[in-house]
Image (tube, rainbow, N blue to C red; front, side, top):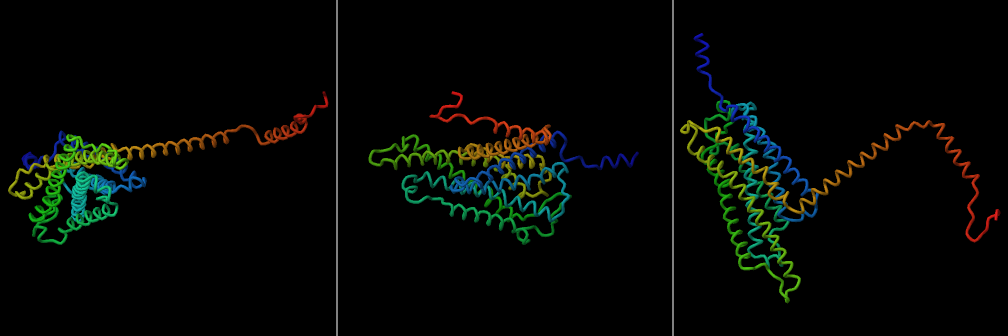
Length: 379
């Protein structure tokens, strides 16, 4: 009796109770499913539609969708498993480093891609008439170059801890108390948070505030670029281009607002947790960590709904996809019905031959109809 009571008193209570585990895990799973399906649709629409690929901004959106897709398909499942294992890790040190490396690649890529989209919107609205008549600020080549540089930078920065000191703490294990905790140094953590999270988000927010001011100035001052008699068709095209840029700027502002409210709380929490240290912060709020991380992952599921599913060209692409699928299904059904009708025919082969011979004889005995301009023999 004494041994069992001492054993029960020494047992550690579970980190997450059922009241917290199941609702939060359900939210994680829902976010992962919606993010995978939505970003797959965005990637498929851009890759299959040539007119969408011609626009440089859509190439940046393709990069954003790929990073969100990798986050939802690779990173979130490990966090879901960690929830059910009460924060435990059962995949070894190598997979732990790989998991955090993918996280350090995909999330900063999304933030820096949003920054590039905001710069494009700001340049398009700052000087819409003279610049777009002569040369477009963002071209396909520039969009591909910017996308490649963003991914290359994020990959190099994520692989820096593999080099060891000064990016990792000396003498600390990767798997600590059964949990995946890579001992990043305070230098690397500070650089990662300020260069890849907080810094780009702050610059993106400032750019979008400036975009909002430009748009408000044009709408207040009546600068809707009404067509003048001497300018003719060019002023109409400029007005349409400016209207499209304003609409795109509003969409980008929604992007940034969603990203800001989803990732900023977790970023500040991560900065405080890493700078203060787990040893000094003994009452580490693990529940708050998983909740804030869940809101960060929510952004990957919101991005397709904020842009792609609200855009007319994307809607037309999805309608064509749906109609083509319906046509294929109808063709398959027709083929199946025809094959079933031929297989279910009860007429034997001999009867078919008799019917064919009778029809031929009947045609031969039947007299030819009288031609026009001639009289029949009966008359």
